[in-house]
Image (cartoon, rainbow, N blue to C red; front, top):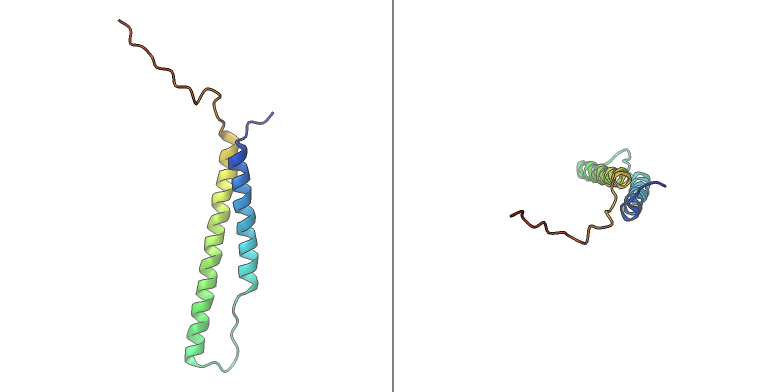
Length: 92
């Protein structure tokens, strides 16, 4: 029996899956230039490409956080008596 915090595991896996979907969609829509573009069009293209790269970076961070949650879920376990706090009486 493996001690796993299932909520954290499912949350991490969901973040990984969403991150990969975002990376694939963002990479598929990379703007491309063409010959004979004006200076303004070239600047707009560079800005669009930079935004696309930034979104890819954010999706990568989402994947990384999800992976960390998956790893932490294997080491995290809830104590059965965590809801009950025992008060210790001082010795007299």
